[in-house]
Length: 81
Image (cartoon, rainbow, N blue to C red; front, side):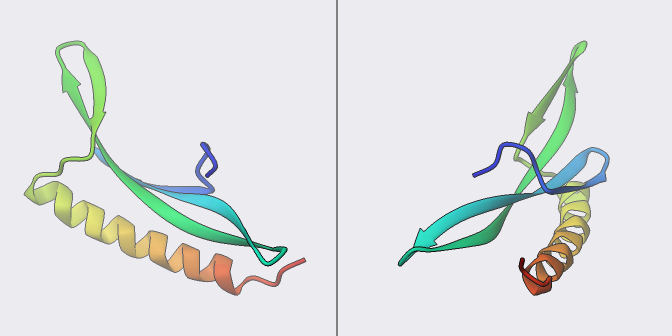
């Protein structure tokens, strides 16, 4: 799994990142995609991240996950070299 997202979708304080993963099956390399959801919050003077969402964060995440899904479909349908 790549540490760097291939694409991020943000609506503060929520971020959805699309990650590319490589696998090999019977000598054929294949890329598949996964997503992470994080929410930024401030604890005193320090910014932190969590996977927990509140009601408003759920709605933002749903919208961002839809965008991530559309992007993954585009990547899956792109011509392969």
